[in-house]
Length: 156
Image (cartoon, rainbow, N blue to C red; front, top):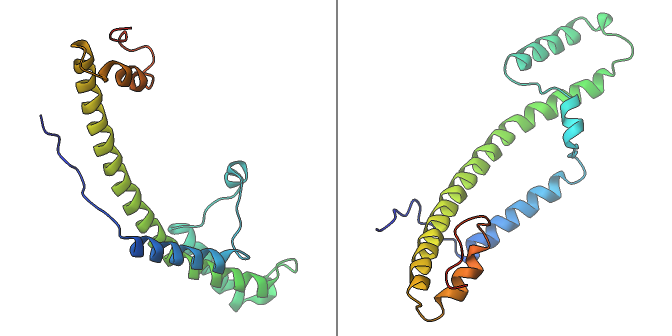
């Protein structure tokens, strides 16, 4: 039974090199600007998105208009800088999220194709080992290690 090939894609060495150069360029630009939080730290901080974004922008507008009401411990210059950087990053993060999702989806389909073809070969190898086809038993036993607790080995 032929399995459907869910995706057929390949990259030239030049395309992979171009992707790597683009990623290196991004990494170089953000290396002294981006922060890496631990998973535990990520839980400590909320994410400003959607409705909260509108509220933060409205609050910033009020802070600018009524600066006399801004608490003295808020550095308005730093706050404005943060607002600007936040606004600048949002569309780029959205683009990167889209790119990452597309690559992950493609890789998921590639992995599914690889796994299904490998399982088909493995099942065929099992049948070949049952009839003592040359070399089949050793290869079957080797591959069978991936599935502990499965069927008994053929010709052990």
